[in-house]
Amino acid sequence: MDFEALANEHKDAVYRQLIRACGNREDAEDVLIEALLKAYRSLDRLRESKAFRSWLAQIGRRVCWQLKEREALLPVMQLSVMEEEGAQFPAGHPSVEMNAARNQMKALLQRAIESLPETEREVYVLRDVEELGGEETATKLNITQAAMKSRLHRARANVRRYLDAALIPANSSGSKLQS
Image 1 (cartoon, one colour):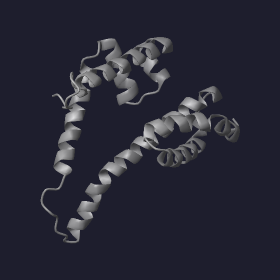
Image 2: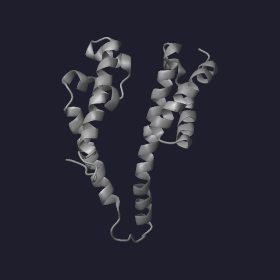
Image 3: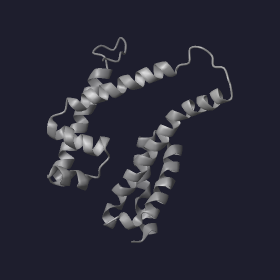
Image 4: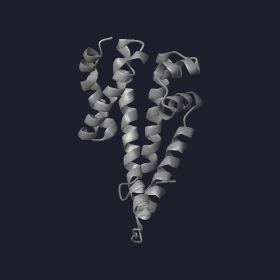
């Protein structure tokens, strides 16, 4: 397989996907470069060149998620370095509220997943939580890839509806996260 030709053909489409996943162009550019490097190093794992775009996009999403995790942990790591150096911290640090909000969102997402019909939940968990590939998910569930894609589409739409209903108040007078 000609990596350079495949990369040139698909990098723009993957970059657009990464802008959405990463939230900004700068991170998407960095993630695309790292994803291309990882793809180049692992090119022997790619079975078919026609799967290159989705394979590269999946690598990119994982790199983006790792970047977001590092960014989320950075304040904690900086705090522990400061503690080791004996720095004093002012009272009322906002991390407690952030942790509470993060835990509340995780619980809400878990309830959204649990509300899915079993066939949709199985696909959603394998693809979006455990990050299995489409072919692997279909094989594991003993269904066609078309059926897997259809169930995943419905599951994502249902999760989105559940979250919208929980996060957007019935009236627009104020916003409130429901538990």
